[in-house]
Image (tube, rainbow, N blue to C red; front, side, top):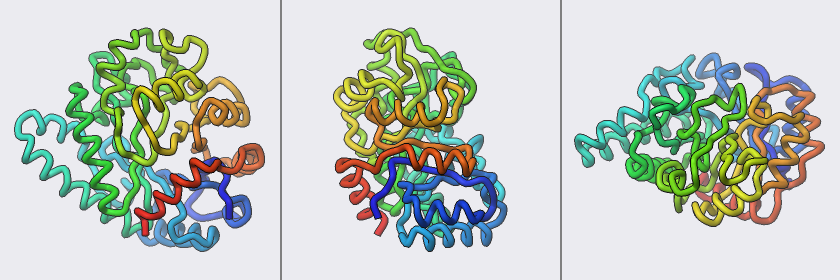
Length: 314
């Protein structure tokens, strides 16, 4: 079945009749789960089994934000209190030990995700920590050193893929330069391209990830009229050409306050600007249905890259 260019979400611990119909008949590209969907190990395994059965796809993309510490959607069933900032600090002291321990950590995390039935984790966060970085990023960042963020970010992608878990680099082209939280308002960054390219864009450059998530940030000196997710200039000129990202580009959540239009318009503007998929996280069934009606089927490029993802998951 051909897929629609959207990642949907659900409201509760089990699927409603409407959600079952949506998954079996409306063909979303994937589905993202949150803490609201997870109560116990047996419950989440059962939910994921139902999702895969309805989509008739054992590798149907099921995403989660399982970064650890402040962003752990699985906190009801696992203790995942470590933040990646720990590994960034360790890298400064002992590179070899850091890389060894970080790979062991990723092995354990990926094993846990696979046991549950998940196959995509929206890590790594490649945002560089700045003096005034919004607390929404904080210790989710590896480091204030762009090179360390880049190195550990690429290790994350490679090692997750080795473990048959797909990673999502975020928030491209960089959220660390913002002092605001895009969940609540549009962050506006007034830095010039030279500084952004040297620091914030650097960790994303030529990363081999197959998926990336946009930053809902307005870079005033690059495109003063459009937030990144709506900006053809940034997506085509920066993300695709100068940063060199070759994979599927997904929006961050289109229900976030940084985007000022209604959901249908947010989705349309994201796709028109060059996003390949839109992400909807609020879980409202009526909005899911409306969005699935309005978004197009994935294009040939996205279909080809999706096949590459499925090859890793086999």
